[in-house]
Length: 173
Image 1 (cartoon, rainbow, N blue to C red):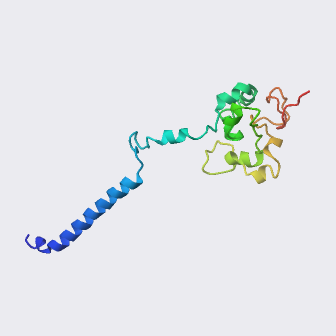
Image 2 (image 1 turned 60 degrees about the horizontal axis):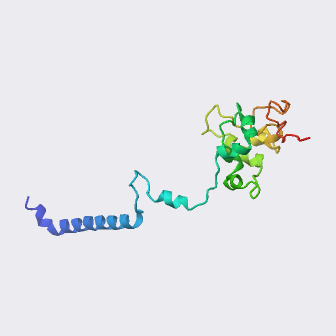
Image 3 (image 1 turned 90 degrees about the vertical axis):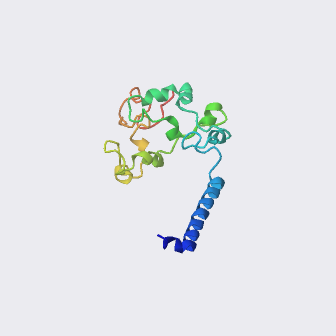
């Protein structure tokens, strides 16, 4: 047993390295971990205050439907009934606050639709997936599908498809 303590210098060095490692860890933790982290679980307490300084970009579906109830009616029962407006039309907070100052943009269907519907083995088997080049070539999706109710073919009357025939906007007299 006395032989172990005969190597006292080695043990002191290892203990010193271990202690130095703990000191470095504590210092780095104090420098790198923000104040308030962990107060509410695995979150930083000040994150909500930091987020509040940014302007609101999204309006939410309720704000959209105040002025556009026809869009919800058009999507009712279709494949896009659960998709929120801003998922396709982008952030509309400024438009909802002042529709004359900020116009909502009609999305370009070609790159938009493939974000969700491009064939991908990671998506559920029942989810509509297409190889765009094979399915439509260079045609936009809205040349054959109604955007708010994509399962409706273009020859269905406008009254059923929410006023859109063949992916076009409703005709006004």
